[in-house]
Image: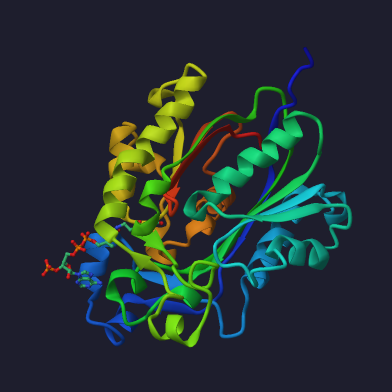
Length: 331
Ligand code: UT7
């Protein structure tokens, strides 16, 4: 049997647009207040893309930084995967836009739709191509401009979401390091609790769908909350179980940044002290597919991880989907 190649992160980058929307700014727009938002979500501000600034611009900046840190040239990329629900256009994929803009001439490119689980899903795909020897260098980006899909008259959703991009270059790493396990899952029966109903083939854009606000994020917050608290810890335990590890083997938890109370519940389930949990939700809010890679990239740049540390990424989101990646930090 041929030995599997170990695949992991060679370099990371992230970018968020400079404009911020604070809780105090939101107080002026909808019936909400800073104290409620901080207490119920942990969010203080979010970054917002400029008018006319598409998601690919944020993703491009994160990608350039990741390639630079990895010391991989764009022309040596074999594949570009963009995890997103807010691509520039329905077609072409934003991955193809970036493949061209980066000069990744030989790279295959596609977008991946798994909402907030997208970065983990894309990372598993990338690592599998590298582990089986088919490809050497794969760029994975999680990027969103959710502000363009938020109804700023709906206080149930507009307080939560922000814009940003995080990118990772995956390639061969030392034996035994990199992605060592994962768990991916979906329960489509929960599809209606978090969706953007309009704009697709179910409700193609018309004056009526726009008037009804179907182009915006719709969410049953309580249902998503219950689901998240249930799956965030469970998906990590499933991935650990596959390789004979337990929660006591984890050095760091990098959770999807949706709500501080959900993160704390996951940490509790995994017996992780909060000092070992990467949390940046106060500064960014929920950036769907961009949340995990930005948190990971920031933590890496703060030198929080040592080579060989076990880092668990845990996500959940629309679909409904859940996902976890267990990595032995390779840098
Ligand atoms: O990537 C996945 C995306 N989504 C999520 O992860 C969302 C998960 N869900 C959540 O994070 C929480 O359910 C929310 C933050 C959305 C809501 O928090 P909650 O603790 O579930 O609040 P609630 O909906 O039960 O509302 C409690 C109260 C209600 O008032 P009454 O009925 O008790 O008088 C709401 O009307 O708070 C009120 N409320 C607000 N008040 C001020 C709801 N939203 C707001 C608001 N500002 N923005």
